[in-house]
Amino acid sequence: MAEFDLATFLLALLAGSIRVGTPFLFVSLGECLTEKSGRINLGLEGILVAGAMSGYAVACLSGSAWLGVLAAAGVGLLLGLAHGLACSLPRVNDIAFGIALILLGTGLAFFLGKAFIQPQAPMLPSLALGQWSDAERVRSALNINVLFFAGVGLALLLHWALRATRWGLMLRLTGDHAQTAQALGYRPLRVRIVATAVGGALAGIGGAYLSLYYPGSWNEGLSSGQGLMAVALVIFARWRPMACLWASLLFGAAGAIGPALQAVGISSGYYLFAAAPYALTLLVMCITCRPGQSVGGAPGELSLTR
Image 1 (cartoon, rainbow, N blue to C red):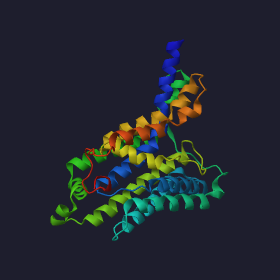
Image 2 (tube, rainbow, N blue to C red):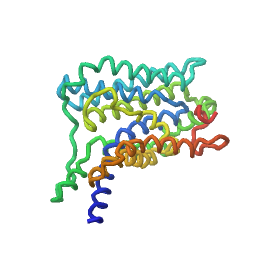
Image 3 (spheres, rainbow, N blue to C red):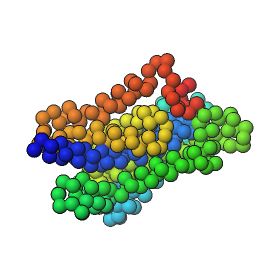
Image 4 (cartoon, one colour):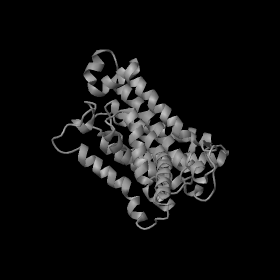
């Protein structure tokens, strides 16, 4: 019986890491792209919430969850573009404007989203990969959303593009040494604006996943700080897209500990285990960002390293 309970717990933890980790994956890939250009965007939390609200609202009004995802990406693109343009101005601080973007994104989402708290929007589809099994737990665990596979494909694509394409070289050079990039004919400000806008679009898709699949509703406490935690996740992953994938699953597993324990009948301490992702974030920041310690792999132009 104990062995069966352990297997059930591990299966639930695996399924939970995918469900909870998918928005981390999109937001962290977006932030990885932004920071590779030498800019940090702390406003991802606001973009995530705005994407969740706009995606849910459009899906509810149009009857199409995929139109909701597209709308969330568009809103994220616009907010990311605003961050990129504003931070290209003289004496505008990336971190300070990112905090302002959190307030703007969440404020607009809370104000405009009040009418969509009760209505039910269509949900994103999943792939039933567990039909081969007779066990309901296995079928449920292997019911995986399409966006997760899209995120895995995107991580692989970014991993290849950053290493093997001229675009990747331009982005990395801009993030490491803007003056050298400019001497070679690139435009660092333009590169950073585009990278920040695309990063915002990916964060918006992560928000759409929250409202249109898991937990699958719109409310004002939907994000729970995942946008800010994604910044720590990127540092932990050392600005590598594939490492962002594994780190997202790790953060997802931390958030799924409580539900996984409930799956085996252990409900005591549920709220304590719900704090695991925040504790992991603090641990990551303490280990990787200690005073006097260089952050390996960080772009040279990034605010965290200057």
